[in-house]
Length: 113
Length: 113
Image 1 (cartoon, rainbow over the protein chains, first blue to last red):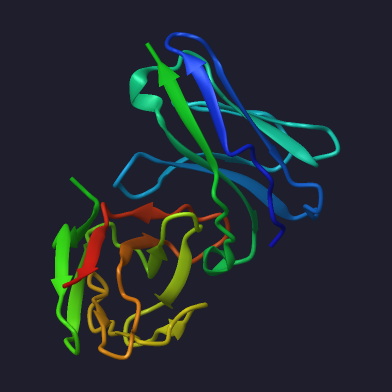
Image 2: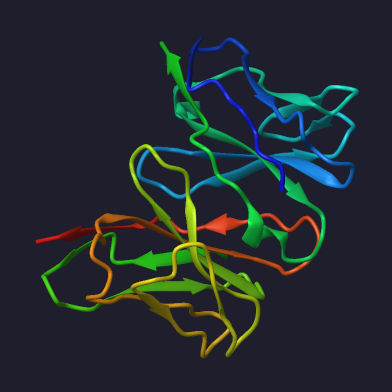
C-alpha cells in the first residue's frame, strides 16, 4: 500500500471549516483513501473513505483530486471536540488489506475557541 | 451497543512478568488486530487474526503472544521477552473483505514498574 504525507499540525477556529490535506502521489488505481482520527488517549475512529469521487457523510467531506495524487478532508464546522490527530491512509481493496495499512504520524488538528 | 472493549485501561508490569491485555468485540467481526503505539511513531501491527483458531504475526510480534479461541475475544500477552513493553496498545476489529473499515477499542496503557 502507498504511503501518505500530511502536515504535522494545523490550527482552526471553532465554527470554521477545517481543511486537512494529504499527499499520496504513489497511489495505484485500486487503492482507496481512508481517513481516521484519534482523540487523545483513545482508539482511532473511522471518518470516511473514497476512491476517486468526492464523498460526504455526517462527519466530513472528502475531496480527491482528479489525478488522485492528493486529497483533502473537510470538517465543515469544526468544534472543540474535533481536536484530534487525523490520519490519511491508502488501502488496496483486496480482502484483508487492513493488515497492510501504513500508519504515519497524521496531522494534529487543534480547534481553538 | 455494539463495540470493542479493551481492559484494563492502565496496566503495570514488573520485570520478568507476563501480562495479558483483554479485547472483546460484539460486532460479529471476523478479523481482529493488535497494534502498538509509541510517542512519535505511527501504529504498528503486532498480530492479527482472520478467523477463530488462526492468527498471524504482524510487523513487531517478538515478545508477544495471542490466542483466538472465540470469535469475540483476542487477548494479547506481553511476555517477559518483550524488553520495551511500555506503550499504548490498541485492539481493533473488522470484517475480512474489501474496503472493510477498522473499529478500535479505547486502548490499554502498559507501563513497567
